[in-house]
Picture 1 (cartoon, helix red, strand yellow):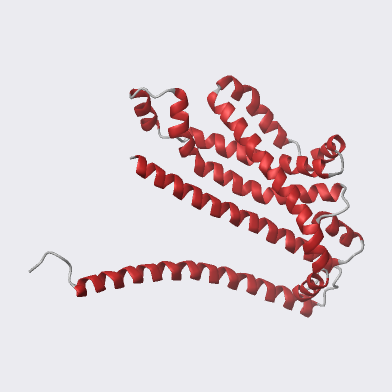
Picture 2 (picture 1 turned 120 degrees about the vertical axis):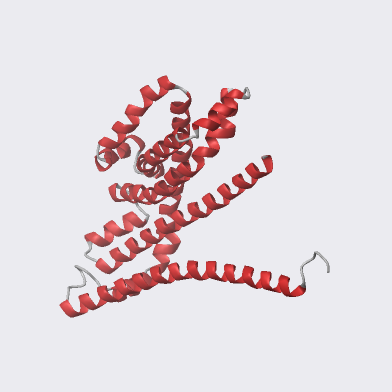
Length: 281
């Protein structure tokens, strides 16, 4: 009698493996199904309420009218305004990632820099952002730089705070071990503190990704000639509620899309980082 597995044993193991994979896929699809079901239920209730209560379309249009308006205005929304808002949001988010991460690193590595910079970071958020936005438009103008500046104002704070807090949660025992084996401050930072801070960093980036759409929209509301915010402001002034809701729907989908993209980047990056760590061990 050999020590190898028989064909029957291998078939059972393969079947169990397939069952586990099927269960995981089923659980994931079940969550997605529940989410879609809740959205459909909300839309049906919205549609029924508008019809039964006979609400005027310029106050609260039903989803069917919003869908019709979106289809009729799809060329303007998708080919012109969408890409302008997305460009402003992505540029603002990119600048915030570099600036916010740089500020967090400076505060973590230098206690004096923390005492100088952290109060300014907090103060920048105690003043209402909508009150500061016109000031930024006055400084940077009503063109693309002004919209990017407002997007940065909306997005840099969660990146700074999340990344800095991520550095603070580094395991103290592992840090002491690195010091015991003679690692330099820079080696501890690169090999231990940066990997430990990555989950917090990506959490801040995901929040900032959704805020970047809000920042770009506010900039377009204050003054622009194109963009979803400009389109919505113009529709609101003309009491075109279905068109306004169509632009708002597109903004929601845009923010959701950026959040999902950042989530995928986080999963890929953290998985790769974990594999590299395992290989190093």
